[in-house]
Amino acid sequence: MALALPATEISAKLEAQFPGSVVESSGNTIVIKPESTLQIASFLKNTPDFDFDYVSFITAVDYNTYFELVYYLISLKHNHTLTLKTRCTDRENPSVPSVNSLWKGADYQEREVYDLMGIRFEGHPNLKRILLWEGFQGYPLRKDFKPQ
Amino acid sequence: MTFKTESFVVNAGPQHPSTHGLFRMRFTLDGEVIQDVEPIFGYLHRGIEKLTEGLNYTQDIVFTDRLDYLTSMSNNHAYVLAVEKLAGIQVPERTEYLRIIMTELMRIASHLMTVGFLLNELGAFMTPLLYMFREREKILDLFEMVCGQRLTYNYFRIGGVSQDVPEEFFPAVKKYIDSLPRFIAEYDQLLAENEILLMRTKNIGILKPDAAVNCSVSGPVLRASGVNWDIRKADPYSIYDRFEFDVPTGSVGDVYDRYRMRIEEMHQSIRIIKQAMAQIPSGEIQAKVPRILRPPKGEAYAHVEAPKGELGFYIVSDGSTNPYRLHIRSSSFINLRLLRELMIGTKIADAIVIFGSIDICLGEVDR
Figure 1 (cartoon, rainbow over the protein chains, first blue to last red):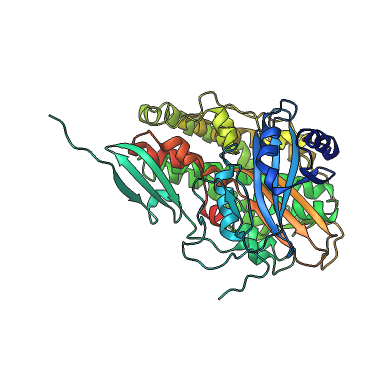
Figure 2: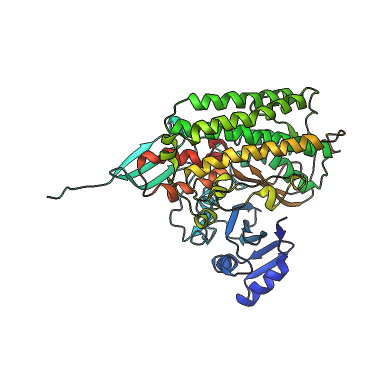
């Protein structure tokens, strides 16, 4: 059975390593500040106890006042999981650091989030629309999207 | 004397017989060698994730049939598991077994298609494919017996299945899975000892285990690279912990290993179906679920080992009748990242074989 790692333990370690980066943690979920996404992801991937070598999926949810990005991480080695979240409050120009440099599996998924939710991933080498065509106006998965 | 050389761009698709749907690849070639490849897709994008927000949880099952339309049963399963997790619904025993039998039959049907099409792409045009279709037809007949449909089954319900199987179903399944190993063995002998097939698939498109994990690859493609990762074993959902079966893994990670994985997995599916048929109890097939389901506020993620890889549904509920947000973790879409890993540096003639060995379905890529 895949083990859902207790978030409080991990967040204590994260807090010691990167003070002020963790917003909240409960159950199997840790919410972190968007600007520290890349450092924390890198820490989680490269620390031997965690070894999160596999990013299962990346997605985003529009909560009207903020966007929440969800990273579902798995360690194939230890068979444990963690849900990492970060929130963007800027509706006009939301952006988070890209984790593409750590996991190539993030490449298309970040493009998909950009395409449908309009969140920019800083440092992504080829951030452009992937499912919709170039020149499409708006981001359909946002709650305030009005189809033409 | 020196020749002036320059790379040139070749377009494949979107209407190309071996792309299994509308899919385009833009190759940059240096002579025969691929320098770069850019997959272009989205031609079948229907906005399913957005559409589900406008309909209630039961109505959304219909959309899942239309993701990977070759593995509808598995899609149904992943979706209902996520909703049941969200709403805390316990499923009756008999239903669990029925679901396992259906999804494993579906796996066999999907792998038959994959192997058949792979051969098609190697130039064994249509003959092997039609043999595979012959066997797949029998599975479709079984499904038709159960739910009256041959492609988009819509068989699973939240907390159950739409109807119990008819009396003649289990004898028919038994007859079918008893005949299948002989057929697979015969077929495998014809193909795996064929020199052309071996030359075209061995050591072609090698995927290293580290690269496979880093690219979030899942399913038979991941296991062909030697990574022992099967969600049925790693995170047993439904009642998979009750069955004995092996997880076949490859050693090289080439096209041939990916072909082998599918053959081996069909044998394992037969084992699971046999055990499930021996253990299945009689009884209820539907848990008590409100007609209009309102799961509590929260979120849930459930994933299954679909024939093509990890298929997962991430659902956020706001307590209303419709999902607030539904995200589909589609293995076809994520596995496509491999194209660049595998194709750059190989010859253009191998591109289509490599593409076929990844086994994608555009319905699930574009959603």
